[in-house]
Amino acid sequence: MGIEIEAVSKRFVRMGEGGVSEPFVALNDFTLSIRDREFVSFIGPSGCGKTTILRIIDGLTPPDSGRVEIDGKPVTGPGPERAVVFQNFALMPWATVLQNVSFPLEIKGVPRQDREVTARRCIELVGLKGFEHVYPHALSGGMQQRAGLARALTVEPKILLMDEPFGAVDAQTRHLLQEELINIWEKGHQTVVFVTHSMEEAVLLSDRVVIMEPSPGRVAEVLDVPIPRPRHADEVRRSREFVDLSNYVWERLRQIIIECRNRPGCAVG
Amino acid sequence: MQLVSVVVLLGGWWVLSTQTTPLTLPGPIPVILALVRLLFSWEFWLSLLVSLQSLAVGYAVSVVIGLVSGVGFGLLSRRTGAIFDAYLIIGLAVPITGLIPVVVMILGIGLTARVMVVVLFAVFQIAINVVTGVRESDRSLVEMAHSFGASPSLIFWRIILPDAVPSIMAGMRLGLGRAIVGMVTSELILLSVGVGRMVVKFSSSFQTANLLAYLALIVAFGVFLMAAVQRLERRLTRWYK
Image (cartoon, chains in turn brown, red):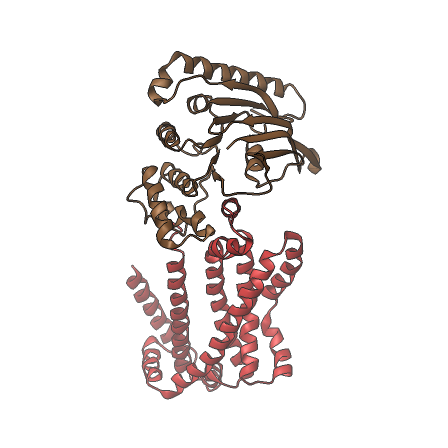
């Protein structure tokens, strides 16, 4: 499913200096087309609006102006074709892995037998087989996030929205999860919008990288990642193309951060 | 270690008791004898049963009112909810003992009055904890449920309420403690029945050994009730490791 984002703007009110609340422009005139089955990353310094645009695409927050359309239909709220993977996992601590993963299907009213079958399949897909009756507190961060991913996959979404999903796990686990995500995605080939802080992660996983800048949040540059698929993470990480692209993204981000620091009212880095 | 501290306490008590008359502070032995005698007396069990009546009814009423009102206030917006917060805090801070005469004027000195006193002692504690539990539910979980298409009612029953259980159970535990205090206090002041009447009977006739034994039994009973609630609390919040 393709996503059309056109001239989206969003502002929030936040506490400024001296305790006066001031408007904060999270997004200004954001326009982007995402093709069906494309893997796109949003990267940028904090405050550039990347999480905001993800929430607008999911329908959790409405834009102040502009529109988002999915396959031609405007977004008015969350929908069955989209699923989110959250940065802090958002697992219910009082429920087992199986209960957590089958929760979206339970919301949809799918009978217990059927939803358990689907949930077990997704749990196996993310490598958590055997942990169905474990509670989240007994799982490592990486495993909890895999449960979050399994949960998103149960509704067979056409669009996966991932909000810095690997930000809260350690570096080695992160590497492993990236590999596993590539494998899972190559089976399902959903349209993916992936928010991240990591240049390497963005280049490794995506077809295109959208570099954003803050104050106000907007697109700075859209980069094509012509690394061929299927990608094998370790090989890709060693390749010339990957290194060059990651460096380029970093240089671009560095420019953005420094330029932002020179501007009053811009708070990053 | 526990045993050593008990022995030390008993020893200290015995020494003190030799320094005073049996009326002021009897030694541990007469008290233990009185304790055993009480356990076998129908008077003791009758008084306990009568008091339990007002405790049981009063606590049950407090739980129901506390839960319903707590959920109601907790779901209100911050600003509106804050209006009611003040009343809850006042209710918790007011020395209810001072209000007992007012209750007696309105309700007399029967079971209803005693139940009312217990409710006044316990309900504010329970309500405040329920409000906190409901208000401080995890926003990210609410959002997760919303993103998967959950209705507000489903979000309430499956996310907000389960997330509030630890706070609610703490409120139930603290509320029980206050209810017990309320029960004993109302009887002490109303002099009518149960535990309070026995306490007054023993103290006014200077049966100090009986009084101490009686109080010990009541305390033990209270501790037993609280421990039962704590067991329940722990079972329901198992997953909070």
